[in-house]
Length: 237
Ligand code: F6R
Image 1 (cartoon, rainbow, N blue to C red):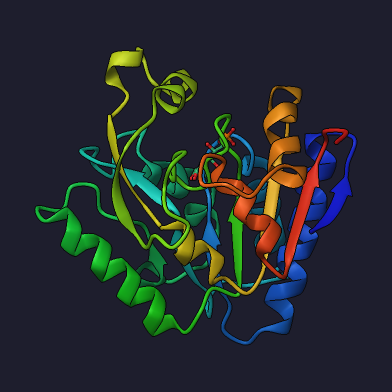
Image 2 (image 1 turned 60 degrees about the horizontal axis):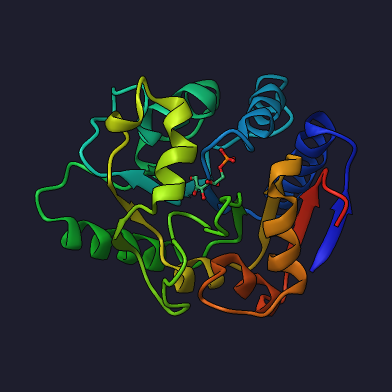
């Protein structure tokens, strides 16, 4: 794992943006896996700026989001559809049909997961997956105990995740209890992983992820086995 230590969230977003831009300039039809949450917000703002300056274009880019809550409509401000529209898609020139976010309102959620996996397969492969880290070590919504070979699936959110994400809702009771997420196997198939972790409160879990035992109890620890991970963090580890 390559580790880039930065001083703050601005430097993290700047360095991450440059890595994404370089990849996009090298690959004719980039396929990118995207994350939501607080961590990538500034990265997305930087990418929007580069598109608006004309430095890059998403016209030939396909994206796949890691996860979505079950039961929220795309126009619900707490859904990940809404987040992506607000922070990235509305500011870039991506073709509507090329920005894939799991449908948490699908009648048949298992079928939705299979459809999503198939779309990724049809796209070839993810050239880059952007990842954040949950306080419990999750990546996507793969909570502790998720098999390392899992594919896109329906999950029950962990109590720690529900509590951590309640900051985006009016009350903790409004946080959905279920979500759809790319599996750990799906994430590990990405050619390159850009792993962004910020904030002292993640120091202990990040040390376990990077230096601890590789165990399904710490989902992100599997990244130790991925051949091309770049971690950008403001944490001294
Ligand atoms: C979001 C996702 C999650 C977050 C993680 C960290 O799509 O998959 O794994 O990356 O929960 O979230 P923040 O950045 O809000 O601390």
